[in-house]
Length: 170
Image (cartoon, rainbow, N blue to C red; front, side):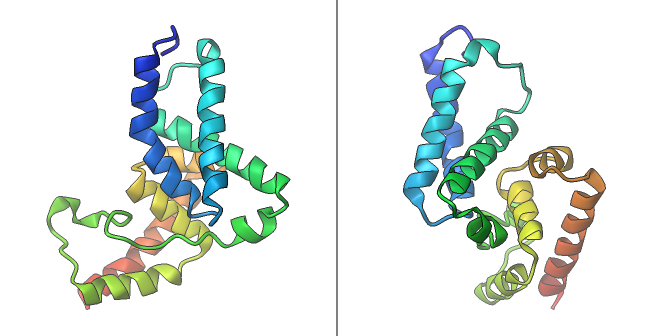
């Protein structure tokens, strides 16, 4: 892509844009703003492609850059304090893809209980869960995206998972 390969660029966009859309829509109901931020991000990437550093995790890079762009746009629209303070992540089977292992097969009542537990988490815990299980970021990557200490991310994730385990054990 650094050499101007539009096909590679389009592949990256097609593969990662849906994740960015879902992530952005957890911060705001202004879907046009989310789409605009994604377009702006990819335009900037294309224009600066020759100066981009190599990365072994494109999704991590895109989420970090997208989050900064969305934050900037929301700030410009003077909605930052309202929208970023109450991230409205919702539990879905995609989000809490704990069934990948085949061990957990939640029933509708379990999903409702899980959603209830999820809504009781802090906005930061919800965002960590979202980044970890929906976007498959590592603890280190989540810490960098959220500008947090790795231990704080690990602790928040651990506390969240303890709450979820209680739901599945009952």
